[in-house]
Each structure stands twice: as structure tokens, then as C-alpha cells.
Image (cartoon, rainbow, N blue to C red):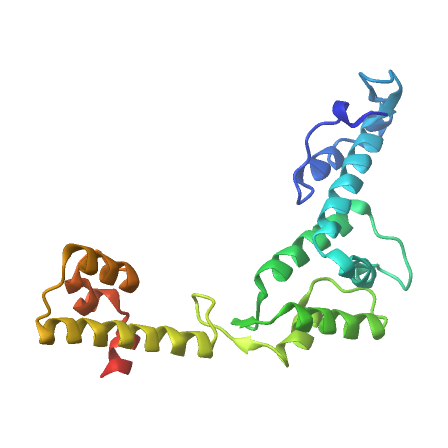
Length: 220
């Protein structure tokens, strides 16, 4: 059966769920024909095939850790070593992809950030406990929280926020030096200075609107 005849599916399995809404009796009688080999197959077979393709693509994002990800999804089975529908496994892996790419997660109304090594360690811990019947990722998040850092609404850790404030202080200091010295720069030197500071005008270095209230308070 060629994949060219399959309808497109979203990564989150949306299209698969739409097929699942079709009554089973109708699905069994619905037959599609592959334009490449002329074999007939059901809508269920098409949906399952496409879901498995999407699942394989998502797992490849984790590289050498894809086996661990597969093992972790087993914790969502309703019974120990129980089966998991491909569409459900795809949804779980897609949710993990967001965590893997950003390192940011939220639990109990607070946001945290953790590196990939921490994520791997956390999932390994959950797998070693041989959990099953998990309804969501909250158990994993509680494990990750112990080694994660709190982050702001912008997704910055305390260290990253401090560095941002220090960078702003340095920019303002450079601006003051340029104004107080009354330096007369050549057009080329002035252009290089503004590019270095990331501004289009010297006055922007002193503009309070470029800083948040918290950053202005820190500078004071």
C-alpha cells in the first residue's frame, strides 16, 4: 500500500481522532484504493499507518534517547505492560517534544527550566519505578522539579535575568561615557559603535523605555 493515497494527518493526531468519530460499522465497510498498487484498505488501516509514520518521525527528534521515550510512554498504559493505541502514544510523544525542545514546563502554577540531561535523568527515574496508568506528565514534572530552575514569564532563569540586567547596566554606562566625554566620532566609527551596542541612535542607550521597571530599580 503506498502512502500517497493517505489523507494528511496532523502531528498531534487530530485527523486520526476525526476518523475515530466515524461509527465502527461504517468504517469497516469503507474501503480506499491505493493509486499505486490498487490494493484496497480500510479507513482504520489508513489512519493507523499514518499515525505510525508520524510517531516514527517524532521519535527521531530524540536521537539516541528515542528508546527511553518509548519506554516512558509505556507508563501511560492502563495496566502493567498493557497495550497503548498508536494515536495515544503519538500524543504523548508530541507533548514530550515540546519539553525536549524548550526545557520549560509548568506545575502548580510555577514555571521551571531544565536541561536535556535532567530530562533524561527524570524519565529514567520514572521508568525504573515501572509506573503505569499515568493520566498526564505531572509525575515526571514533580521528578524534574527537584533539579530544575524557576523561570520568569519570559522563560528566563534567575541567572539569565541577572545577566540581562548587567548587560543593560553596561549599555547605559557606555552611553553615559559617550555623552560625558563629548566624543566626536567619524561617521564610520559612530556606525561601528552603534552596531556594537545594538542601537540606531546614541540616545537609545539612555532611554528608560528600553528597560523594564525591575531593571530600572536594579540599576538604581
